[in-house]
Image 1 (tube, rainbow, N blue to C red):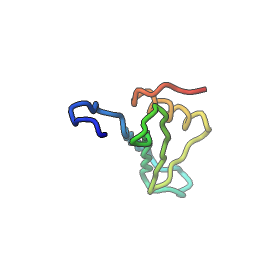
Image 2 (cartoon, rainbow, N blue to C red):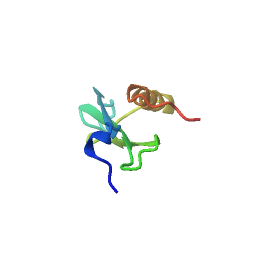
Image 3 (tube, rainbow, N blue to C red):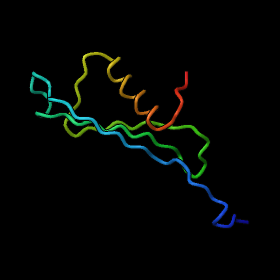
Image 4 (cartoon, rainbow, N blue to C red):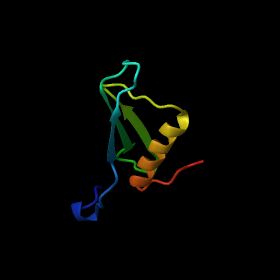
Length: 85
């Protein structure tokens, strides 16, 4: 038996975060680098677990893994998702 439509509540599906920076000095990326980080959940069984998708058509340069980790953590925080150990 299906629930009546009024019993359903909004469910988190996806949050999109987009970043832009100057291209790297070696010229191995575009003049401007764009990065999309998508925080998504599997539906319809949203149990609070999320996964991340990183997408860039231009390349994305970072000096150390800490920079990328910081961006990912900012996205999780912005999407209202708690970090898991």
